[in-house]
Image (cartoon, rainbow over all chains, first blue to last red; front, side, top):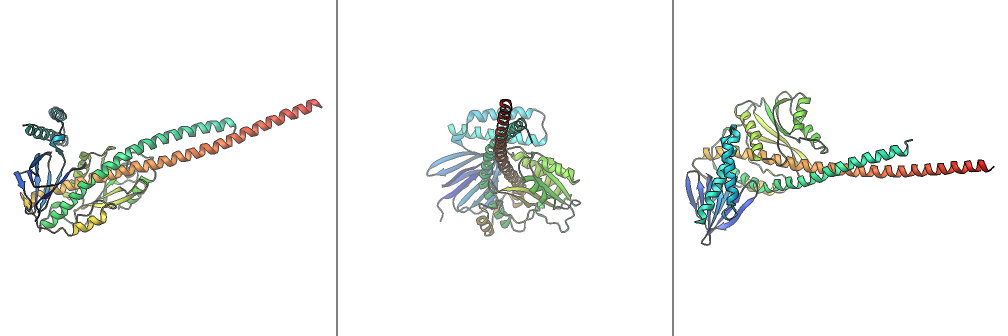
Length: 136
Length: 294
């Protein structure tokens, strides 16, 4: 019986996280879900939000973007366009990115551009949320 | 017989050329490293995506998606042609375009990424559906635009098959033009030939686990498939870019070496001529002196 889950988080740029954890909480598109080892095989999507990986009693927080998750009994594989560990989030930078994205949204944009900017805005907002919640 | 001045002038001009090619070589090698890193960094994602998708399509049972529809009669094809914007990169584009020329000109529409491909299509009177550009560091948004366009063509029934011709980056010295079928989506094959290709091929075969889908298979796969295509095009762009920069670096290195060789040869000739001139002058002086003395 698998006592741990192998949590793998990859983005197009790099492999962000690859460790054995006890439990994972994911921001699923239909609400948050917690995954324990021996979970049934499941394929789902995640939304912008916070991944919590519990490992040896310590919680690790990550900010994440939209993506897909493959869950098998001993593995959680997450494909996403963004994933940043809470400790690595630069609050100032995220705040700047948020302001910039908001400013761009006020301009006239094509649909394609709007989608890109909105994605960027969501990214920075998520980062800020995760960071701020963690400090408390 | 050229004069010494002619030769000096030629040496100077060749030196200038060598300087330029040398500079281009440096630039290309710096960009190459970045492009290679980007291409390599994307591989874990691509690998995992392949695994997930292979498992998903195998585990989804009867599910089919419009993007997977195989049409019995292929009337029209589309070809995504990924070339470079600029020349001076050896035989890269030539090889690529030779591959592209195999597609029938009456039944194929071309979607070009990179200026060279578009120029080629214009020159040979091929049907050009769209032209896209991509930057030195390909952006995901650029890949998405190309892939979206191809998907729209396919889904609206204007074309029945979409292929891609691009240059696969094998290593700095070897880049191979390759073709791949993008649509309809058949079996999910390993994206990377080479490095992880074989081991991955086996692994994907045995993934027959039954999956639960949340909310439903149609939604998840409906989102995953287009994303997979986008990402695949993105990977193609990165490979193409890495190939371009390495090809350019090698081409420029050859050019620099050749220029240096020419400079060497010319210098030798120049010195020979100079010496011959001195000897000749000396001869003239001594002959004149002897004539005077007598």
